[in-house]
Length: 472
Image (cartoon, rainbow, N blue to C red; front, side, top):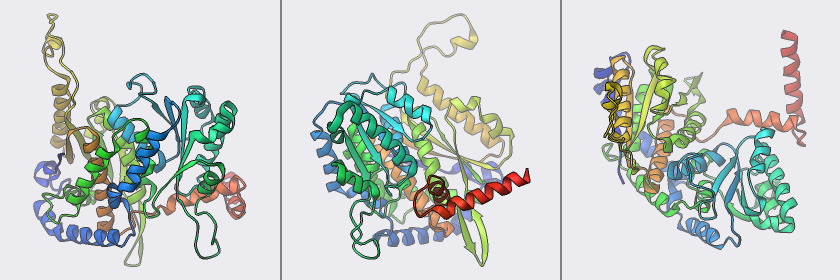
């Protein structure tokens, strides 16, 4: 398994001092990277943050495999109900290994499709249900808290849809992934930590737990991502094997070996000059990963920080672009628009697919030069050409290269990105694992939907809306 990071075109000698990082800046920052490594490792070993330990949880991996092998009915669709980190990881794995829809193979029990209900648009939900056969569908409901309004409401619709078709048998077609267990002390003693866990226990659903020290956007290698992946035929042993190897590398103090820490240091240095990060995969299979990364980067690193008594808003806006597609939709802006972006290309060396352009000529110079060449050579040329154009215009960029895209490499790549994010959080002196900005909107939603105990939030938002109306 081989993943490389190339930072050369982030250097000031390539893009100019105003837009790049000098060698001396990098060397002076090395101690900060090592401090970040030591700090995060200490927190991880204390159990504060659990994602580094997920690839080594053999009992969890075995339990998922055993459940998949024991499913007593034939299914051709896995319907995942979740949102944010409870859905994007599964999409990244499905897209990364089996390819994006609609180019995946025909839907069969040997090749089940993954349908992800990650929004509450009524027409989207209705169309999804109409596209599935309840008799051949296995439903997964995924929510760490077990109370996410979007997930719970959609699941209740899916549950009713299954019951109308299957009656009491519907409960055997549902599995839940959430925080397990009950509180052992305090005012909630004896109560389930997750309402979804309580519902699953009452209804007899198979349940898998999310470790409490693993947040949603870091949960792709927990049952949140591994269970749907295994159910659609992805090799989760290989996924976690690649992630385990990357974990070992990510604890090394040698930045030549520790690709996650080296990438984090360079990204932290260029961050000071470029407030926008463009993830630019040159592979359709990595398109889902780009959206998974967008949440990881935005929720983890966009924070309010207290610095010397001053309140400071930090963060770098992540953007997803697809090569070579978005050379024809975004690159004009990237070359001649505001120079406020850093670009991270994601490349795959071996696509493993036949791609030779037929050796037939037409007497047209603008066509015939392509014959008997390959799409692999062309997409590589497109990426190199975009990179060159960016450099010539003082736009910094770096490249992550995967030898090939299989389970082992994808597992390692996802784990690398999570470590990189955690390390940058340490360098920024922020908590990369909370999301207080998200929680405010959840409280308002609960109030508006009439959840008991949240009435004051309904009043707050109604008062605010009256001010808006008066301002008009």
